[in-house]
Amino acid sequence: MAFPYNDKVLEHFRNPRNVGRLEDADGKATEGSPACGDMVSVNIKVDPATHKITDIKFESYGCASNIATGSIITEMAKGKTLEEAKKITWKEASEELGGLPAIKVHCSVLAVEGLRAAIQNYEEKHGLVTNRVDTTEDVVLKRLKKVMNPLKGLDMVATNLVKEIEVKDGVVRLVIDMPEDHQFSAAIKEEVREKIEPLWDVKKVQIGFTE
Image 1 (cartoon, one colour):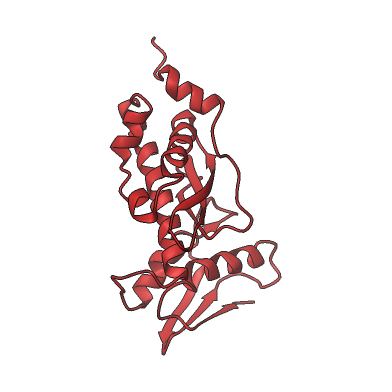
Image 2 (cartoon, rainbow, N blue to C red):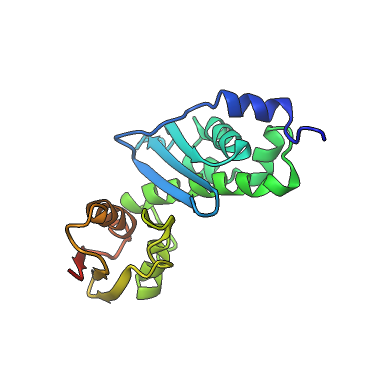
């Protein structure tokens, strides 16, 4: 049976570029789920004057294709403006790697989604989003699907951690079905804030626990 990966994919898998995280990241995002086997986190630093990506890091939890596409995406995005980086497609990433097995194409899609989500995070924080949508309970719920429940390996919505959601006058109030002194409660609370606070019309996020 022939090995499914070409030499370039294997090179980026064995020696991935830009691995790690930026502690002072201007924008960051995580896409995928450990339960599905693939997950990518992307951190970016942006020049506020030129809106160029000056530095970018990624962390990958998954297969060789996942790691290789995270590596190539960061190489392709570095030095580009936000608008230029948003136009990078999964097909371009796959082609840059010399092609991926059909069953692994979703890995390149995931890496591109991670990059675009990190850019969106930056734009939301800096008031650069032009197509503004009012924050509703559905919008909040969609964001919370990106927050992992470490105990289950699935998001907090799928694992029924979200007890209540209320959006009123710019205040988002959440109740999480977990003891406040749980070992993961602080981490989940911080990640929830990271996902909700950048929304353009959110003034305050209030997070409570059931116990």
